Structure formats: C-alpha cells, structure tokens
Length: 102
Image 1 (cartoon, one colour):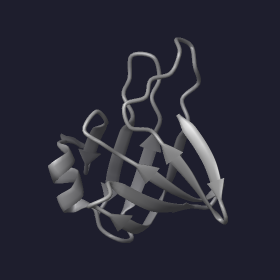
Image 2 (cartoon, rainbow, N blue to C red):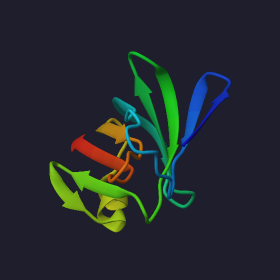
Image 3 (cartoon, rainbow, N blue to C red):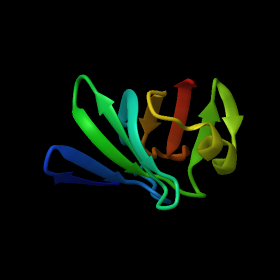
C-alpha cells in the first residue's frame, strides 16, 4: 500500500495490494466528502487523521449496510455524507471498503 501526502489530503493507492504475514492492518473511518466513480476514487474526512483519497478496484472487497456487495453495487450506493470504513490489505484479507450509513 502506498501512502502519499498531497497537500491537506492524503492518498492511499491500494488496488490489488497485499501485505506480508503478520502485518498490522490500517483502517480509517470517516465521511465521504467527494468521489469520482469514473476514476474509482473517493475522499473521506476523518476526525483523527484528516482527509484521505482512496483508490479502489475490482480486486478489493466491498460491503454496503453490513452486507457483502459487488463493486457495481458499492458505486451505485456510494453518496456524499455516507459513513465509510477503509481497511488496507493484510495477509489473507483483501482491501475492504465498507459503507455503513446511507
């Protein structure tokens, strides 16, 4: 997972990545403040770490309202002000994007 600071917004580029066995997962929970579904990115605002722009893709996993979802369903349901949790990849687990409040 790459983490690049860009002005006041940080960027996680996570598509198709995995972490070594025993690596600590990183999660961020916040509110969706922007998205570009054509470019497969969303920006979330967190109280603890500021704003993050996250790139997502077909190798990631998704959930909407607590249920597993496809990337198509995730994109259909993703709206501004949604609560979302991003978890980067860990050994044996894919990158996950979970919309919990719509």
